[in-house]
Amino acid sequence: MKRVEVVIAARNEEERIGMTVRSLFDQSLVPSRVVVVDDGSTDATGRIARDLGCEVVTLPYHESSYLGRPELASTFNAGLRMVSGDADYVMILGADHSLPEDYILRLVEAMEEEGVVAGSGGISNEREDSEVPRNSGMLVRTDVWMKLNGMQYPTTWGYEGWLLFRLREEGHRVKLFPSIKSSVGRATRIKGTWDGRAMYVLGYDWKYVMGRVVLNMAHPADSLKMLSGFLGCCFDPSWRQRRSDVADWVNKEQKASFWNRVRKVLTGAKR
Image (tube, rainbow, N blue to C red; front, side, top):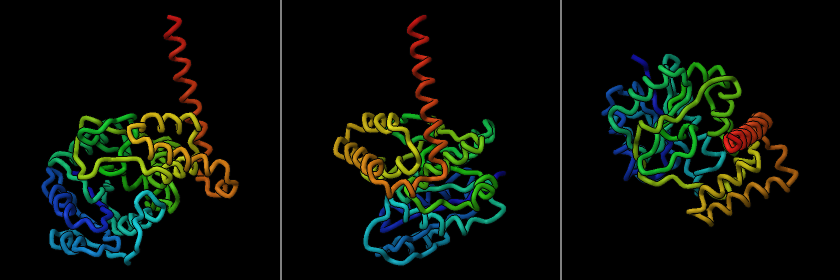
């Protein structure tokens, strides 16, 4: 049986953390360790997690939220440092993310069968636009991530995307398994300017950025902020120094993928 450990970042989540943690301990493949990083909460988040059997890492209070920002990478890293060396997989999980009892087992079996090193299920009632794994609910093989960079996120914009791109650059498979569903307490939404900055740092091709804007026009204000964040970085020379080490690979890969799709469409049209 594979050994799975879980890292949860939580800030003032006393109303949701109990449901999330209980769903983990009710799994058919029960995690051998659940680490909750209490990110400066002012409520009972840490106490509830501890009472339910989690290991809790308590970080200092900070006034503003780190959601969507590079600082959140450091929060997860504090928990990742607690993962034991004999864990086969580590799961990254949001504090409002409840899993059905067979989620981990089904995901492990699917990943093992297809040779996937980072994978997640889908979210009920939310659109899946690609095969890219969701960040919350994602399992990553610990030996692969440890060899990659010591199993730590880079503290930069787009740190979650960095991991998936870096794994793909190394030739590993990552995948979303949409038939393995779970639910979140808060609907997934783009983070406006922060997402635009992350896409620039990661090297996104402008055509992919525009595609994201169009796909998320159900929230036009956030979509336009995302575009503004991307363009703001493009026209500010100081942001070039912040480009990720995967930026060139991502840009080339996206351009090649775009033109490959165009060729398929044109070929199909001729037939």
